[in-house]
Amino acid sequence: EKFFSAAVSAESRLKELAADAGLTENSWSEVDAAGRRILIVVREILKDRTESLQLKMLEINLSIYWMSAGREKTMTLQTFKAVTRTDSEQEQLLKENKRVAGGA
Image 1: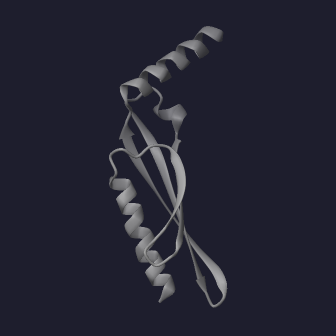
Image 2: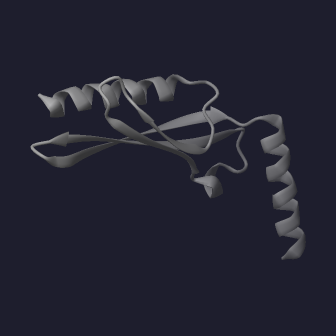
């Protein structure tokens, strides 16, 4: 019962995060309505493959922790999201690419 409840809570929160249009690289923790601790890590992946594109890939990891039979249990869920780069992010990538190309 606790496992199922934690899984539903984690999946629901992961869907909320994936639907967030303003999601950026970050990490934080929070507590759900049932008192379970949730650790969230969002990071950019595949930079070398997407640096020339207008999008970037984010990896979203969510770990949920709860107590069962006197022991801490954990479950980790992961998903990916493609997001459009902001103009400033695209400009920064171009600057970095020019710097690297000029130094080679």
